[in-house]
Image (cartoon, rainbow, N blue to C red):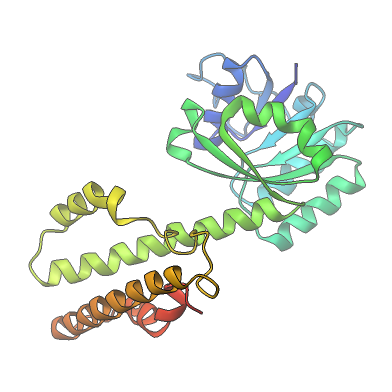
Length: 276
């Protein structure tokens, strides 16, 4: 049975620790807050230092917020790498830039420790084994940590070699925050036009399953360059999009609103509809 440890018991780390405790894999946890494990059923008390956790664990999941915090728990006499040994692997759940990831990897490589970049999504359901993992690793290292990932995740997607998991998470975040901008602009239009934003939100939520998500075009398997039917489908979508976006821009002008996301989407209509 894998001996897993979790560093950082916030929303993600706390949920991961609960899942691993239920699976019988959780050996130790660490957090800067000594009381962080209180109320997490089956989760042991916080260890005194990251090094103390590392002494007891083969796979260590780091679920802090930033690259700086990651480097802090790795380094120094009380850090994880102070107790490095062959066969130890670190799984980085924190979202960091690829430059920061390379700096972290330089440190783990020097200590002879494996590093798996593992972007996660689905945070609100983390305690119910609801996370989806986007993993960057070679096959051998992934095989070593896979039992632990399966112990807390709903699904594990091997996105490619080291770095691919973090790149996938960064791309996923573009969708998340881009959708927030879209919601903001839609709300501004609704509010200025005297439409209830709360009612609009209910309409959007109740129709999401039929309208499609942000990847409904880019995720289509057919290639419009070699499939005439697919080309017609995308051209039909573009025609509708141009008409509807022109109407949105006209309404925004009438209401005195600037809608940069709508303007950008209209300027790049061929790319957005998957025709370029």
